[in-house]
Length: 143
Image 1 (cartoon, rainbow, N blue to C red):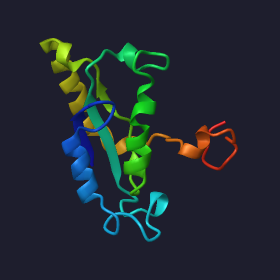
Image 2 (image 1 turned 90 degrees about the horizontal axis):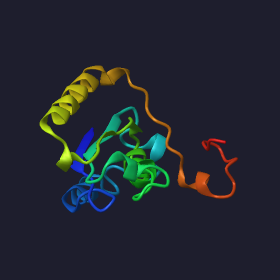
Image 3 (image 1 turned 60 degrees about the vertical axis):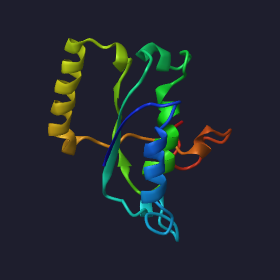
Protein backbone atom coordinates (compact mmCIF):
# COMPACT_ATOMS: atom_id res chain seq x y z
CA UNK A 1 0.00 0.00 0.00
CA UNK A 2 1.30 3.44 -0.86
CA UNK A 3 -0.07 6.50 0.90
CA UNK A 4 0.63 9.51 -1.31
CA UNK A 5 -0.01 12.96 0.18
CA UNK A 6 1.34 16.41 1.05
CA UNK A 7 2.63 16.59 4.62
CA UNK A 8 0.02 18.73 6.36
CA UNK A 9 0.62 20.19 9.81
CA UNK A 10 3.25 17.51 10.48
CA UNK A 11 0.95 14.63 9.57
CA UNK A 12 -1.63 13.21 7.23
CA UNK A 13 -4.13 15.58 5.62
CA UNK A 14 -7.51 15.37 7.37
CA UNK A 15 -9.26 13.59 4.51
CA UNK A 16 -6.57 10.88 4.43
CA UNK A 17 -6.62 10.55 8.22
CA UNK A 18 -10.40 10.10 7.98
CA UNK A 19 -9.92 7.36 5.40
CA UNK A 20 -7.43 5.62 7.72
CA UNK A 21 -9.89 5.89 10.61
CA UNK A 22 -12.73 4.36 8.60
CA UNK A 23 -10.84 1.69 6.63
CA UNK A 24 -8.30 0.51 9.20
CA UNK A 25 -10.99 0.14 11.84
CA UNK A 26 -10.93 -1.85 15.06
CA UNK A 27 -12.40 -5.29 14.63
CA UNK A 28 -11.75 -5.17 10.91
CA UNK A 29 -7.99 -4.65 10.67
CA UNK A 30 -6.83 -4.77 14.27
CA UNK A 31 -7.89 -5.80 17.73
CA UNK A 32 -8.62 -9.08 19.46
CA UNK A 33 -4.92 -9.98 19.42
CA UNK A 34 -4.30 -8.79 15.86
CA UNK A 35 -1.65 -6.05 15.85
CA UNK A 36 1.97 -5.54 14.90
CA UNK A 37 3.51 -8.97 14.04
CA UNK A 38 0.09 -10.66 14.19
CA UNK A 39 -1.72 -7.86 12.36
CA UNK A 40 -4.12 -8.36 9.50
CA UNK A 41 -1.61 -7.03 6.96
CA UNK A 42 1.39 -9.13 8.06
CA UNK A 43 3.43 -10.12 5.03
CA UNK A 44 2.26 -7.00 3.17
CA UNK A 45 4.29 -3.84 2.67
CA UNK A 46 3.47 -0.16 2.86
CA UNK A 47 5.22 3.14 2.32
CA UNK A 48 4.62 6.84 2.54
CA UNK A 49 5.22 9.06 -0.49
CA UNK A 50 4.83 12.71 0.37
CA UNK A 51 5.84 16.26 -0.31
CA UNK A 52 6.77 18.96 2.17
CA UNK A 53 6.40 22.69 2.13
CA UNK A 54 9.90 23.37 3.43
CA UNK A 55 13.39 22.43 2.26
CA UNK A 56 15.18 19.31 3.47
CA UNK A 57 17.38 21.16 5.97
CA UNK A 58 14.24 22.19 7.90
CA UNK A 59 13.47 18.50 8.51
CA UNK A 60 16.79 17.41 10.00
CA UNK A 61 17.59 16.78 13.64
CA UNK A 62 17.99 20.29 15.05
CA UNK A 63 16.30 21.82 11.99
CA UNK A 64 13.46 24.32 12.13
CA UNK A 65 10.75 21.62 11.92
CA UNK A 66 12.69 18.73 13.48
CA UNK A 67 13.77 15.31 12.31
CA UNK A 68 11.51 13.98 9.55
CA UNK A 69 11.74 10.44 10.95
CA UNK A 70 10.28 11.68 14.24
CA UNK A 71 7.50 13.45 12.35
CA UNK A 72 6.45 10.32 10.43
CA UNK A 73 7.02 7.91 13.34
CA UNK A 74 3.36 8.00 14.48
CA UNK A 75 2.27 7.04 10.96
CA UNK A 76 4.92 4.37 10.49
CA UNK A 77 4.58 2.76 13.93
CA UNK A 78 1.09 3.76 15.05
CA UNK A 79 -0.77 3.09 11.81
CA UNK A 80 1.17 0.97 9.32
CA UNK A 81 3.11 -1.33 11.63
CA UNK A 82 0.20 -1.46 14.06
CA UNK A 83 -1.99 -3.23 11.51
CA UNK A 84 0.85 -5.53 10.46
CA UNK A 85 2.50 -3.87 7.47
CA UNK A 86 6.24 -4.04 6.92
CA UNK A 87 7.23 -0.42 6.28
CA UNK A 88 9.50 0.62 3.44
CA UNK A 89 11.50 3.84 3.50
CA UNK A 90 9.46 6.92 2.65
CA UNK A 91 9.63 8.71 -0.69
CA UNK A 92 10.00 12.36 0.25
CA UNK A 93 10.09 15.40 -2.01
CA UNK A 94 11.05 18.51 -0.09
CA UNK A 95 9.82 22.03 -0.89
CA UNK A 96 7.71 20.71 -3.76
CA UNK A 97 5.94 24.01 -4.32
CA UNK A 98 9.27 25.66 -5.09
CA UNK A 99 10.69 22.92 -7.33
CA UNK A 100 11.33 23.74 -10.96
CA UNK A 101 10.16 21.54 -13.82
CA UNK A 102 13.54 19.81 -14.24
CA UNK A 103 13.57 18.85 -10.57
CA UNK A 104 10.02 17.51 -10.75
CA UNK A 105 10.87 15.45 -13.83
CA UNK A 106 13.89 14.01 -12.00
CA UNK A 107 11.68 13.15 -9.03
CA UNK A 108 9.22 11.32 -11.28
CA UNK A 109 12.04 9.41 -13.00
CA UNK A 110 13.48 8.39 -9.60
CA UNK A 111 10.02 7.34 -8.37
CA UNK A 112 9.43 5.26 -11.52
CA UNK A 113 12.82 3.58 -11.10
CA UNK A 114 12.08 2.83 -7.45
CA UNK A 115 8.68 1.35 -8.23
CA UNK A 116 10.24 -1.02 -10.77
CA UNK A 117 12.59 -2.45 -8.13
CA UNK A 118 10.45 -2.05 -5.00
CA UNK A 119 9.92 -5.80 -4.61
CA UNK A 120 13.60 -6.08 -3.68
CA UNK A 121 13.60 -3.40 -0.97
CA UNK A 122 13.97 -4.30 2.68
CA UNK A 123 11.69 -2.82 5.34
CA UNK A 124 13.12 -0.06 7.50
CA UNK A 125 13.65 -0.44 11.22
CA UNK A 126 11.16 1.54 13.26
CA UNK A 127 11.73 1.77 16.96
CA UNK A 128 8.74 1.34 19.18
CA UNK A 129 7.83 4.09 21.59
CA UNK A 130 9.24 2.27 24.60
CA UNK A 131 12.71 2.59 23.04
CA UNK A 132 12.62 6.31 23.71
CA UNK A 133 12.29 5.78 27.44
CA UNK A 134 15.23 5.52 29.81
CA UNK A 135 15.33 1.73 29.38
CA UNK A 136 16.58 1.11 25.84
CA UNK A 137 17.60 -2.47 26.62
CA UNK A 138 14.11 -3.78 25.84
CA UNK A 139 13.76 -6.24 22.90
CA UNK A 140 13.49 -4.51 19.53
CA UNK A 141 15.36 -1.36 20.61
CA UNK A 142 18.62 -0.28 19.03
CA UNK A 143 21.51 0.44 21.42
